[in-house]
Length: 190
Image (tube, rainbow, N blue to C red):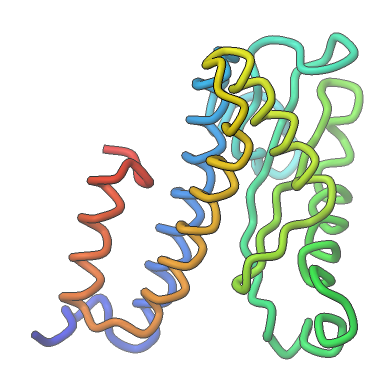
């Protein structure tokens, strides 16, 4: 099966990046729901200057009486701009991207706690995101009674990253099948 017209000329990679971003954001939002912590994706009214906003915010305080706001990003471990650093240290690309996100959303400090969640294409996370997801997993465990919730959360994240890495090398029919599988197992919103 040939690729549709809009998918030609590098558009497929853009589509995959958008799908991956929404899937990662949805994974975090669903985790908050599982922990019985209401949240809102893409909240309006947090940033007025440039029109950009983080991917989500909790609707109740997270720590210190402030809600938590998050922004997910995926970076390529072997991109030319990161390869020298990632060759020396695992998660160097994720840490650099997290620093940039923190600087971008520095104006939110007085309103909420900001948490960048940066994943690399070869699985590493930035350090604060790793700790945050462990804390979120413990909150889910408190609700469900199952101590393995943190492990399950990291497994879902790993499957999502691996699946989207494989999508880059698929033809259009494979992309459609993978999107269906993501919907079926709950990695993408319906």
